[in-house]
Image (tube, rainbow, N blue to C red; front, side, top):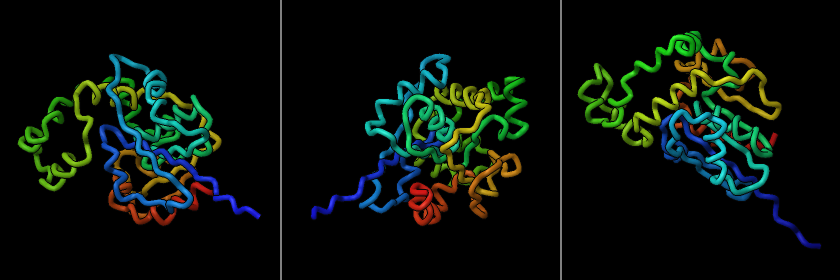
Amino acid sequence: MTNHPPTMTHVYFMPGMAASPLIFEHIELPKDQFTIHLMDWIMPLSKEPLTAYCERLLPQIIHKNPVLVGVSFGGMVVQELAALIGVAKVIIISSAKSEKEFPRRMRLSSKTGLHKWLPTRLIENFDTLANYSMGIAPKKIDLYKKYLNMNKSEYLDWALDTIVNWKQEHVLDNIVHIHGDADPIFPIKYIQNCIIVAGGTHVMIINRHRWFNENLPKIICQ
C-alpha cells in the first residue's frame, strides 16, 4: 500500500503598509505541512483603484486555493485578492474586516482629506526623519530602516488615501481575524469577532512572533 505524502498548504504572507516581507522573518510553520511564500508591494499607478492594484499583484500567487495572510493594510489587500481568486482561507492580523471597524479618526480623515496633509516626503529619507523625529527613539528609527522598504511618497500618499477610503461592508465568510488588545492604530473596541492576543500591539507580527508560530498552524487547519 502506497503512503501518499500529505498535501502541502501554500501560505502567502502580505506585509503591512510600506513594510518589507522581512516583518515575517521569524515566522516559522511546520515544513512538512506548509510552504511559506512572501509577497511584496509594487509601486501603484497614479490614483490606481485597489482592485486594479490587486490584479497586478496576482502574478505573485502561483498556487491554487492558497491561504492568504495579511497584516494591517496587507489585511485589506488579501481580502481584495480573495475576491479575485479562489482561496482556502483568509487570515488578517492587526487589520480590519470592513470600514465599520475603522476608528473615528480614520472615518473623519476619509471625509475631510486630513491624511493628505501628512508630510510623507519626510519618510523617504530616514536620516532626515531622525533629525525631525521630535522624540522618536533611535531604536525605532533603526526598526523603520530595517522593516520599511516602500517609503516613496507616491506610494505612501496612495496607500493612506486607499486605506481611509476603503469600502467593504460585508465580511468575508472564510476569514479569521487576529488582533492585539493594545493596538493603537485599530483599537480593539472597534473590532468584532476576532482572536485576541493579550498585550498585542500593531507590530505584534514582529515582537510576538512566538505566539504566531505556536498558533498559526492550528488556525490555518481549522
